[in-house]
Image (cartoon, rainbow over all chains, first blue to last red; front, top):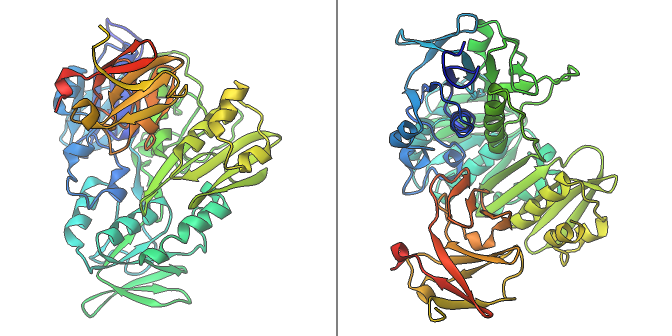
Length: 411
Length: 113
């Protein structure tokens, strides 16, 4: 355990330097943790991933620009780094993390923030050259370097990443086909009305939208063919599959930690081993009542879990978390959503300008909201939800009533 | 002292919790400047978020901070320091003085064009 300074957390090794892991490291320092912190990642830097599907064709797309911190910044914060290093083994009982190069890091506390890998389709041809996924900076860079104006690209999966990538590809001049088995993707995330509105943006901008289950990829003369069940065969030059994420649980499993589609953690992000925590995309909460929650695969959820685990590791009270929040950028549109937009409640629509805003109200309280190019509405909605301020459906539907004024009135 | 800075607005022009954008040409600065009213106190920062291109004047003002309208990076109104990701670089602050009803901004010397 801890040697002579600070806290019982002792030397902390954080595996994974994405949003969650980086935040955990910096938050530990902010809270006064003085013992060693080592940030380990197979990637070459600690960097932000949302731009990978949005900004990959922008002129200044460099890993330095996506990095959360420079080597100097990290040094100033006394955060040791082992970038480009693969972890081979976590040994909770011995308090050790073993790297592929043979080094063993002493770890009184381990925080696993290894995220996930892009899910691959279990279909013939999924491993053909030219079929890729998008998860890392290198994935994005490779795509950037191989797509030019006129390149035919199939994007399989029209969720957040697929839709964003299709938009970026199209803007770059590629001939894009966007394929999804669902008539309206993203329905649980933003509700039917807005999901329909968002999905309908692709075709007018020149993206071919195909609804159907992708059943096979094959090579053909001068390209690849995507076969869609009961649908067309689409000949392309490139295929990018964006069908979700598989949590990287192998090391945790090998270490004997409880795992069920994610590393199981309690409300304090602690795994089944007392000195091992898990945060971000890789973690899944099993609450004190034993209920398993969905993994939260959003940027802010990862960030907040990084903040929270620092409090937990240091034995301090974890600040309360408010309504969830995420954004998506596609077709020059900025979508934001907070809370839940599916499940029990009444859907209220506000029609103003080019895009509708949607709300879900249950028992006179706002449960969720989403808007396009109107962030003030969602920022206000978030506070209305968190502060449990009663709302009237008529006011929400009225474009002349700003949500901010509702917040001010009732505060 | 009343000659200090440039008058950019009058008290009452900026609603509580709101910001306005002052064009760079008005102040002779390299970036536009956002002027905020946080509970009756006025603050000025470089207007462009250091994360991606967005106008902080359209951000959410609360408790001494402004939250970027695009990705919710948070900056301290007083000194421009980053309070929350995804931004990692501070924005430059400018001084604001009230002269009667005049809101005057004194551009940060480091940000003069």
